[in-house]
Amino acid sequence: MNVNWKFLKNPWAVIGGIFSLVILFGLILFSVQVVRYVGQIRSGAPNPFEAKTAEKKAQLIFRQPALKDDVRAQVEMEGGNPMLGNPEATIRLVEFLDYECPFCKRSAPDVRAFLARH
Image (tube, rainbow, N blue to C red):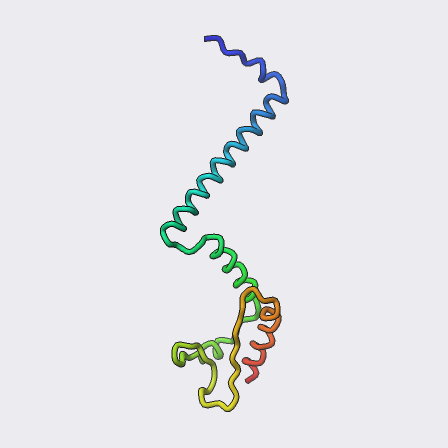
């Protein structure tokens, strides 16, 4: 069997061959990842794309200075809801957060500073 390897002398043919192999390898990796995601979604697991983006958004929001340990130790559950402070207080501060809201992100340090002071 006589194999003609003359194309290896042409540098553009070699570069084109290497480029084609890289593209083929990338397509194979992409296909494997798509099959894995489809399997996770069909099995009832949470959407892997939403989980990653929600986790990143939460990391960005909670990169704010953390509550002091003494304040965190005061968190109690009242009727299934987390609560800080005296349940009989005359004033209650109820905070609702949206992880995608830029205003909630900006107000988080102020609320935490208020909690630390009071």
